[in-house]
Length: 346
Ligand code: UD2
Ligand code: MN
Image 1: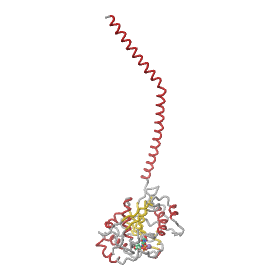
Image 2: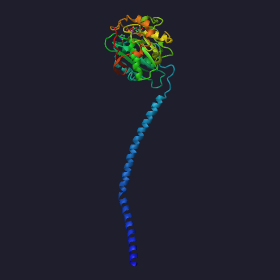
Image 3: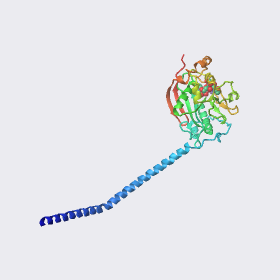
Image 4: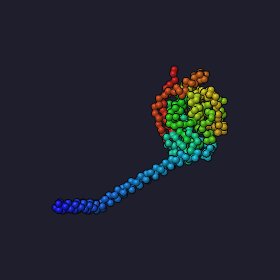
């Protein structure tokens, strides 16, 4: 019994000794690592710090960017009347002008599009220009039109719709194509249908739309600045997206010169819309001299077509405009859409 008790006491002491030994060795082990551990933690901390700094910097710059975007989204609306307008200006048509010069003058334009940087434009306007073989006219127009539209503080883009091939020209169908293609880019609310050779002389002639379709060419240099005839609706016109849609756009069937502008007038009048014009003293244009183009001979069918407009407008127009887009070039000063629109049915 005494032996047993002695053995129990010894084993309990042994247990304590083993426990103390273990504790000491753990402490010693920990002490031996402390330096390294601290360093590792410090290193990690340092790394975390740098990454955190980087992240913070990035975040800050994003916030700055976002608030900058917010600033631009929350820019004040441009004034009702642009302070940049100069009224009538003397137009120049220098033979030495080239596209690079015009691009340099318009670094603020990107892929044909512009919006004011210091205020929110009141109007978003797509300018549609039917075109073939009139490069020089296009250059003069770009030269004058970009600064003209910028002075009006508009958000705008210029689209040139280029007829491919040498089949008879069809101005109206090209303009339908321009409308259908431009609305794929942006929800343009207003469209200006614009001859390539007409340069506006006075920036009070605002390129905006109204409750009614607008005809912007009252006078031209070549016609003594007089309206050609009462219902004249050619050259440059402005219609909202909805007005143009409501009349089913232009007819697609006017191949060659003439009649398509009168056809549009008939469509407009049939919808009980009324053509309005700016005052004659501002709605003035210089038409760059040209002869009748080859491939755009007078359309002998135009009077016959015109008599059918009231019957045909529903089935001939935007809803029946068939074409092949061959290319879309986003150049610095305009979007060029080259299109195969077919040819007249004989
Ligand atoms: C008048 C109208 C025009 C149109 C045309 C009859 C005015 C100021 N303009 O213009 O809007 O109704 O009669 O169709 O009254 N084009 C080319 N390449 C060509 C042919 C035409 O780019 O080979 C384009 C170009 O944008 C030109 C427009 O079509 O400005 C009208 O053709 P135009 O200038 O030969 O006809 P014009 O001056 O009699
Ligand atoms: Mn012309």
